Amino acid sequence: MHVCFVNGSPKTGESTSHYFIKNIEKMLADMPCVEIKAIDHLQNPNAQEAFSAIVKADVVVFVFPLYIDSIPSSLLEFLYVLESYINSSELLNIKMPRCYAVVNEGFYGGTQNINALNNIQYFCRSVGFHWRFGVGIGAGEYLRSTKDIPLNHKSKIKVYNQFKKIAGDILMPSVSIETDNFADPQMTKRFFMLMGAISWQLKAKKNGLRLSQLKAKPFIDN
Ligand SMILES: Cc1cc2nc3c(=O)[nH]c(=O)nc-3n(C[C@H](O)[C@H](O)[C@H](O)COP(=O)(O)O)c2cc1C
Image (cartoon, rainbow, N blue to C red):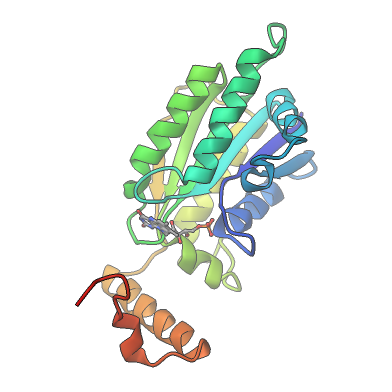
C-alpha cells in the first residue's frame, strides 16, 4: 500500500503542512509514503509524473493551509490541472485512491476550516476519489513554532488524536461513515492572542522594525 501526501502550502521554506505530514507519516510505521508539493508542479512540464503518482496511490492525503477561509489559489490551480489529467487519461481500470484532508489555519478555532474541507471533499468526489474524512486544525503556526513540544504532549493531544485517527483509518479503514473533525491545542483564546502579539513583536525586532511600524498601512492613501 502506498500513501501520497499532497502538500498544498505555497511556502518555499518550512511549513506547518509539512510538519503535520511528517507526524502522520511516523504513525504509519513502515508504509511507503511520498510527499508531493503542489506549488512545485505548477507550469511544470513534468507534472504528469506527480499526477500519476497521486492517482496510482492507494491513499491520498491533502494537507494545506487555510487562505481567506478557503483553499490557497496555488493548490486550486494544481487541482484544476489534476482534474484535467484524470479526465483525459485512460484511468477506467484504475482503482481510485481513498482520500483524507488536513487543513490548518493561523487563528485559534479549527472549525473555521469547515468550508475548505467541504471544498476538497467536493473535489475528491467529483474526480472519483473515495472520500473518507477530514480534519480542521486551529493555531497551525503555533503548533509548528513550538515543535519542541511533541504533539502527544497534553497541551496538543487533541491534535495528535486526530492524526492518530487518520493514520488508523489509513491502516484499517473503518466500515462506518466518518465525519470531519476539528481540534485546537489546549489554551485559552486570550493566551493565544497574547502569544501571537509577542511573536509579531519579536519578528518585527528581528527584521529591524520599530513596533509602531507594525501598524503601518502602506497601501492606504492619507
Ligand atoms: C494569504 C493568506 C491568507 C490566510 N487566511 C487565513 C484565514 O482565513 N484564516 C486563518 O485562520 N488563517 C489564515 N492564514 C494563515 C495560515 O492559514 C496559517 O499561517 C497556516 O498555519 C499556514 O500553514 P502552512 O505553514 O502549512 O502554509 C492566511 C495566511 C495567508 C498568507
